[in-house]
Picture 1: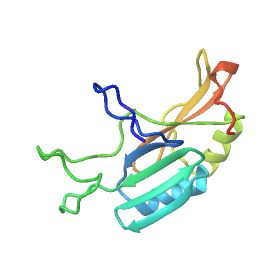
Picture 2: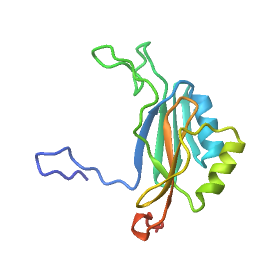
Picture 3: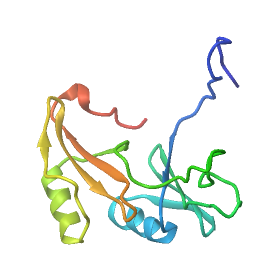
Picture 4: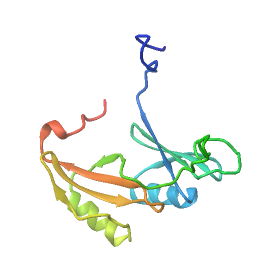
Length: 150
């Protein structure tokens, strides 16, 4: 069912959020997200594309695709190539940030910064193998916590 007030993009009811990351190497990204961050591989039908999931988050991985193969990795009409990196990110809530960081550092994961403390909790940014950021977040306030599933 589509819902719209006529002035906005129609809303399709969904239980998940989908994020697309451009990655240099889809296989390396699959290994990183499934090994270190608890994602599940849902499909990998072609070398430049995969879908992973973690709870209600679907992570779509696309390699840049300048060969005209279509999909989320293809260039824009003006020729601009999609590239990994930047600062937009999704956050993964953790119960013990220091312990999570210790495990990931021991596994060789690259961090952009050290743990910082803000008004809602503690956070740190790590990079996937292509340089896309992922935030680990330990809330310190009840209203900053995600509601448990169900």
